[in-house]
Amino acid sequence: QSVLTQPPSVSGAPGQRVTISCTGSSSNIGAGYDVHWYQQLPGTAPKFLIYGNSNRPSGVPDRFSGSKSGTSASLAITGLQAEDEADYYCQSYDSSLSGWVFGGGTKLTVL
Amino acid sequence: QLQLQESGPGLVKPSETLSLSCTVSGGSISSSLNYWGWIRQPPGKGLEWIGTMYYSGSSKYNPSLKSRVTISRDTSKNQLSLKLSSVIAADAALYYCARLEEYSYGQYYFDYWGQGTLVSVSS
Image 1 (cartoon, rainbow over the protein chains, first blue to last red):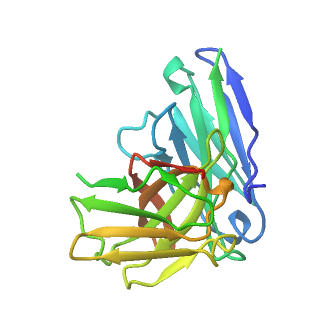
Image 2: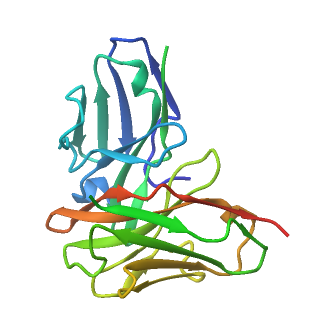
Image 3: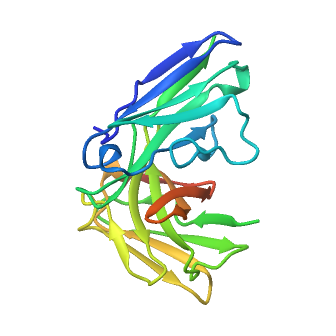
């Protein structure tokens, strides 16, 4: 059972928009700790995609965007492409656990 | 360009100690700008934070593993180490080392990851 809750899977057709939610609690996201997102392509290590809730590092397409509100955060992907098919993880810090926590991951399927 | 490379035995017997190393190149593990962490991923499952080493040399561990985990470093080799004692089948996973970047006061994210090393547990 992950501290941060994500839907196990989402899907969308090429060109469509999908969102992945990440729900936490008052000891992590709700406590003011930022949310970060990682993309894990099949057979590879995770790669950071969004940091600090909504900051996109250079090299990440602007089709990817993040937001945070209250005890939840979301990753939105617009203009879906086949290459976006991957597992996506949210991550934050939890003050009760005094450590870093991940969501359970969401598998994105591009139909 | 920072690179992290995990290494260690791919097979560990139940009840024994798992020992892994992470060699860092292109940056110093002693830098006060970063922390360093271990994360694992059981086959087909999600990511689990194991622990983090601060630039001071102290470490913080996942409470669920705290009694069995030790993270240390060898600054002369620029290496991070992970030891997990009394391993069980559930410890079989892909083990990653990663760098924690502070982009804002007290806020960190994992910006560089190694490619991971797979550890199986079997007698």
